[in-house]
Length: 104
Length: 153
Image: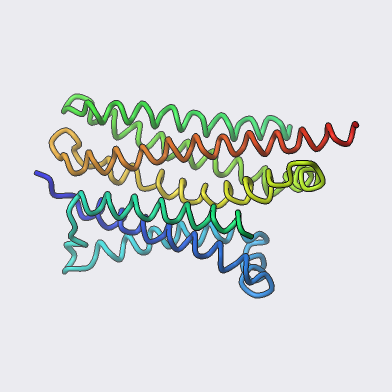
């Protein structure tokens, strides 16, 4: 009985996608202070609030969307692959953020 | 008052790590009897992380600019330019991991080995990243301290 629930898989995949998106948004906003960073500041008064809000909304929206595919059965992947996807995304996301601020 | 807010941020973060270790051990020994507790502790981990994030975020947005200016003029400017910048963005990933945890822990980890594996990896990341950014917070504090010491000669 090793089948994961559709929400475990869908929101797990969403976690991986959102973690990478968040790391990429760090690079994009820092390299585009006058456009992206200024827009994010203007939206909520601080870019960090906007960043957090966007990522939480993306996490739930992508997870909910992935749970609806395959006629409502959701995304289908094995537990081992889901763990691999989440682990890779967290490590790569962490390396992007750390590497960027080391170099920036 | 600002110190109390900052200490509350650290307290919630540390409690989140402790609850995470508790959950890790409970899931390693998952059985039918501890399923309810596993779900409750997973919700507690998520709630404590949200509290740490919101309280820390309030302090960061309201008071940190003073510390930032001091740190950047001191001998450890990297305490802000690397450690704080990295911490504030890795914390968003940590928040997402903690938010996902109760969703993964809703499965029966006593009979579903796949779900157990997912929960163990997610809570393991929460604990390890939590310890790492707690250490980053300590370096930021020392960055402010050495900057103030430098101004005193």
